Length: 111
Image 1 (cartoon, rainbow, N blue to C red):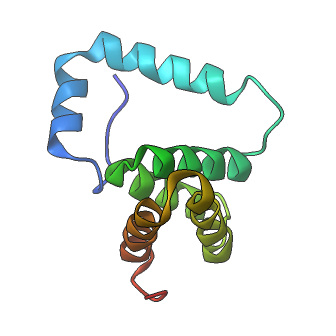
Image 2: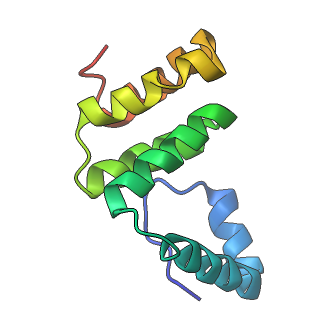
């Protein structure tokens, strides 16, 4: 099993991975295969995944993908634009919610 060390992971996520180690390992392998399946660089993949999380209005996934995008070199401005692009497809309330989650991750400097 892959060791989970992030302070940002919910206890239920960690517990699930510990209880179902084979499933977690399979999910990890699938994620690696999907990430390697095309030409996108790491930053672009993270911004795309952030956009998907915004569309799903998934608080935890937005926060996670903001952290991961920053870790691979995305700027706050690039992350903000990714969130703003959701406005005409997902709507104003979902975009504002995602922007709030992002600002909480980056320290609220944008608020």
